[in-house]
Image 1 (cartoon, rainbow, N blue to C red):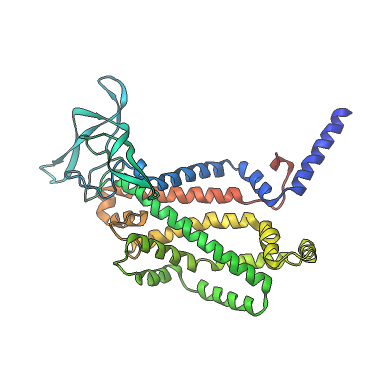
Image 2: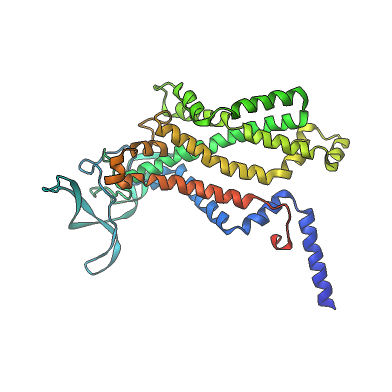
Length: 379
């Protein structure tokens, strides 16, 4: 009898947790049950940490050229030598030419092994976020050793792995910065449109109709073509971020407007107005949290689109330009047919972009809350 009573009380307390839980609690309960979303967030955190300090994780400078290593394949990493297990090491690559096919190839010079060292001194000091100087790299072969080409080298002898690491700083943060600007504009104008109504609502909605009627890629190309070629990398970065964000706020603003129109007639909104709550606090404190899960999903799904926009512009020659390095610039270098046929390792940056977009999508799926929640969702 006592056990049955305790079980009933436990179920009652569980129901109460569901009914009185905030939207953030519901999202957290749902998110932690989504194992793929957790994995996606862990990978994203790792990618953004690498993007913040690319100089520490990259074995070389992105524009450093290694003579004699033009179009070299990825360096094989060995762990067995002299019939026993050893620390990871590499051999120096030696360029040869096939006398019959006149085709360039690389073979390993096994006369000397070069161990892979960790926390090796850097050739030149670099800074974290442009502020904190560091003079080491996580891994390398040390002074006098051959280059560690994990992803191979391009036609100029530059390390593709290091360029991919440095390119993540621009591509990932353009996506994050552009979506944050889009989020602020969409939330603000969508909230004003849905709550104010009248002429203001009509003007904002017709502006959104105009923006949504224009194809994205041609509009990006027109705006990006207006960026002067002589601008420094930082200014071009800011311009592309603004271009990608100013255009993409219409869809979010329209959804926010629809949500506010459906919620503003509810009893809790009327009660808040009777208590004298200001319109700004009413929207920010009571209305927006009711569909916060959608907003988070929208952010996580919009970041891949923004990254794709920067990649597309750079691929078309209208975005970031050398010596700047982004994933779009790397893909532009690999657009020739001969690359896919003879140098497929130059396509490896594609997997960096696809993996980051997949992790963002999985994170958004984990943030989405169901309309109905069960006791299994609560702690």
